[in-house]
Image 1 (cartoon, one colour):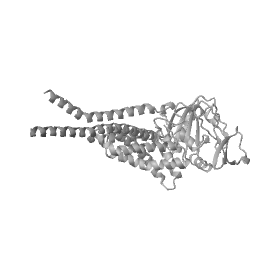
Image 2: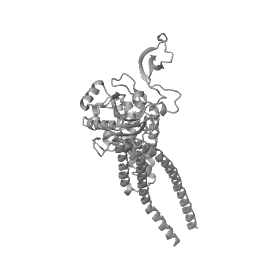
Image 3: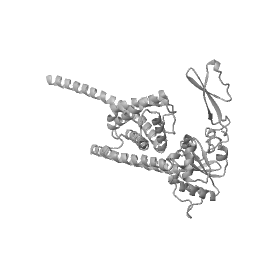
Image 4: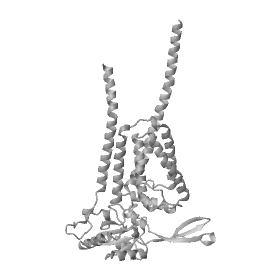
Length: 449
């Protein structure tokens, strides 16, 4: 009888222990499900952010230069370019680690390193507003500085969760194959970045992609004058067509500026965009004459005359002669002071017309210093950096006579690169699960026996 009682007690104890063990397992399943969702959301955000930066690394360089210009610290310009490449590739790799479960303990801490720096930085940007947008998603997705801050707060919450629970979730790529994933992802992101830097971004998120017009009749060329008044510390802009405020009401005139005119009859946002070009002295708007003339045009774009080497002048001058022989108009649009323009003219001795525009406008049209844009009837047909052109002397006999031979099929190249990368990651994932499937098959075979 005593043995029966002991047996019943042990059975109750075993059942109680079993229920106690089952409860944590249920909690872990719940936590794992949440962790997978957090991993996908946070990892996907970092993959997207890093990828669009890799597409256009010069855009990241320009944005970092804007930040450095307003920061109370002296950072050497030589560090901006490698810093931009490091940021782009690191963000992409961090997102890949989370999505594929690579380095499950280390990757959340890498993510935390990003957030410890960028969260307070984004708060300062939101409060001080030193730049119009943070550039965290490049030109692909422009969000306000406050939206950037709250986005980073959400990422911080996800980071804390992943630090606590990411190690309890599974991997998609086995640990001994993770270094191959790092190498493949690193090569992919570096190749995309180098292409965007040396040629042009594979996807053009800016206002003037291939197929668009640099000059729009809907926009017009006559700039509108905007007057800036201030009252009680608040500044407000008034157009010429508006009723200007009275100083008797406490308004004080602060400044005035010219902006591109916009017209409500424009059918789309792209149609309201127009590049504003001035004469060499920077006084007269010649956008219609330069960009709206039609025909075939080659534009030499130089956003920074000081960073342009004199050695490029021979290629530019020979391209000008080549274009003239083919009936193609050749012109330069540069940004710089009159002294810088005169210095450039002394070094390069151009026989082509030179016009001026804002450096930010030139950078929106094409990346590179210098860059070349080819137009037909005002439509952008292709754009490239000068150094990416396959010839140095356009006067050689074997140089093509068709300017469209220099066009780049960047989108097809990007699609091919993405498909190859995805295929490589799928193969790594498949190899990772072969032992798991083999183990299940062997257990099923053992049960059948």
